Image 1 (cartoon, rainbow, N blue to C red):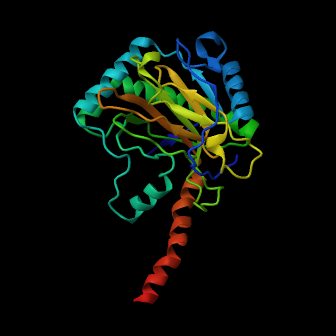
Image 2 (cartoon, helix red, strand yellow):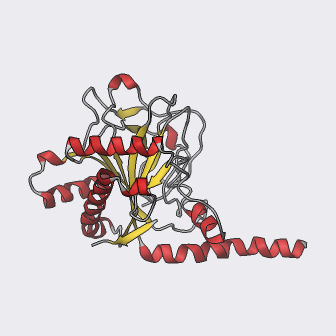
Image 3 (cartoon, one colour):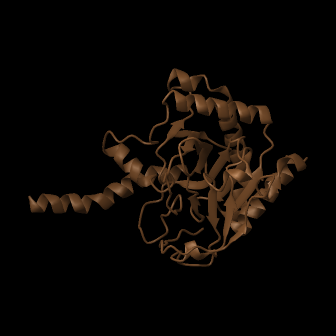
Amino acid sequence: MVKTKASKEAMRWADDGLEGPIERKPGEEGNDFDIRMQDEPDGVLAAQKIVQVLKERGFCLVQANAPPELVQAAFEEAETLWEDGEFKPPIRVHDDRSLLEAQLWSHALQDVEKSVWIREGDSRAIQLMNALKLLGRNMADFCAGLGPLLEKELGVAFDRLGQPLLTCYTGDATHKIHIDNPHEDESSLPDNGMRVSCTYYINPHWAPEEGEQGGMDIFMVPSSSSSASGARKCPRVRVAPHMDTLVLHLSERIVHQVLPTKGWNIRWYALQLWGLNGDAMQQMSRKLLAMRQPSKEADSDDD
């Protein structure tokens, strides 16, 4: 899951069925972006603007300005992978280590059942997916370029990037509200190393008449709050799964949720990638094993 090295606050919540107002939502032309890269001639200045938005709100909506033909090709590759049956759960549990990994990444991969890791060593079908690979590399380069500024301005440090994960949302499905790295909330989970979460949508078929499904709600919980029990009641920013939409958010802070989908005839695809802190990742398995040890000892005593 981890690729190569690259050059706050978590909260709890309760689902009581009440929802807060949508303060920002897509219009007829797509999402309400914070930054449009096609309008930013200076890449360094654009990165500074993005980091400033992340500093103020914890998330930033970016129109990435990828060539439309590249995004279209990536969508067609995703459809081919779907038709070939390549989509699987993101983590396969086969031993104690993979079980620990699944537990630690369960929040970030909340309800993800249909996915494909975009990496060279996998099946022949995935090796042929050139557009998805190129977009994944572009995401990694973009995220890595923000790293020094994020550490300087927010104290958010990551030194490696995960492999790109292609996810598909379809069928009659709802998804849970969550934080990707909730180690600071009352769940007492170890830090899974996630610092920045990146989601890039590749769906050229999105249109307002398709309804609001398959995208994302971002809950604007006050950063000064010590509890997110009322997160669902907070104002939201709604993001459509429109092509060339890049959502960046702080993994340890932002409460979000994938929008429900209806029917199997339409599929919504996104590429996901995380900026990771290597030191935290080295410690997480050891900490989770220590948490599990008392229960094992209790089981032995019972025997």
